[in-house]
Amino acid sequence: MTNEELIAEISKIATEAESKQGFQYVETFVPFAGMHSFMTRIKEDSKLAFDYLICVTGVDHADHMQMVYHLESTLHKHMMVVKVKTADRENPALDSVTDIWPTAEFHEREAYDLLGIHFNNHPDLRRMFLDDNWGYPLRKDFKDDIHIVSR
Image 1 (tube, one colour):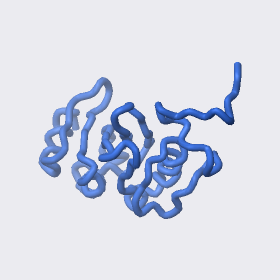
Image 2: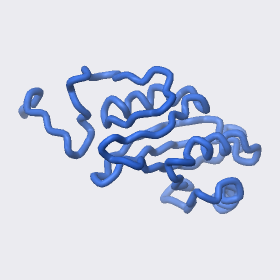
Image 3: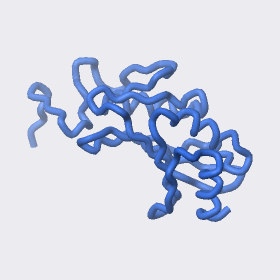
Image 4: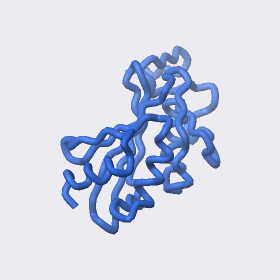
């Protein structure tokens, strides 16, 4: 399936999503309210079959938080990127996709630990690296006067 055909298939199952050809992969922007439903559809649809979650990354854009999901269909050999903005930057939250792709569990925990993004219905949402009193060091507005490491 070409990237143009992939964009057409995505638009058939999700009118709320906006897809375009990115630098390398098809990029699809999904509203946060319909994100979980969209993710379920692109995994279960036989023409798309995105069965492999490669990577999940949290991004702080200063005015909003965003999650970026890199997906692959091992059956059809196509890939895509799904981007979702959180509705609230100060208390960012999205639905977990661990019920769709179990490998998301640790990716989501990392985003929670370092950016403070909460994942609804996550089976074990707790910090991985830092103590609870650390704050979220990958946020652009993070300041820590106690644990400063000088160069």
